[in-house]
Image (cartoon, rainbow, N blue to C red; front, top):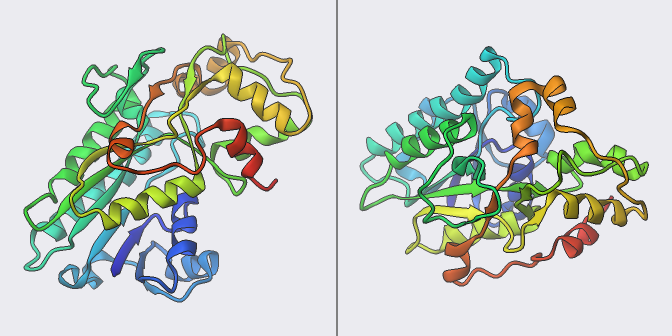
Length: 297
């Protein structure tokens, strides 16, 4: 297949390309073709502008681009950067697909479980419709709506509501590791908030699964079927390094340090990948302990 990938130099994008090189004809969209080629180190077609790509000859679009949501404090300018990095490109992709004579068969577009907002311990599936109105929901709701504009009888749209991606190569886990390796990690706040996670290998596998299933479209929770509390997560991560998790980070400390962004850590969602499971997808890593043990640190 001929596949256009945005956000290719991100955590998921890099893993996806590593799995697909030699299997598919890849087009990589990046603001810097030279930098992307250096990071990825694979033979592919590198483009810097959508205007240089003929969407009539593309089979699939994988849209993973976006400013990292938790890298910086949420100033108003940073919020705009987070939103526009997702919204503008997704809108442009949908427009290109809409105007094709022979459009791509599928647009797979990133989203996040932040779509649901904070939900406490209630089980959340793709059918959940009671959203908590906060920044994470606002980002994802518009992001998904823009992607859906590409939908037609010729093009199906799959929305990837992604949880915390576990990898030794980056992402949220990389930020936690230094303290936990030293035995200084621990729960955040009361530790009761749910953490819905997915091993990077399963994330890549489910994208490939959806690519091949031309009968599937709409939102999919990209999370393992057994979410855990933040306290459980902290204990298992500490155990991975033969340590304990004795310290608790009070909520007010996080708020002082990160402001509104602290809500991502203090509140969570108990998310279930119902639609993936119902359609036969099998996770290789369903238990957090096994998933952490499978990572090479």
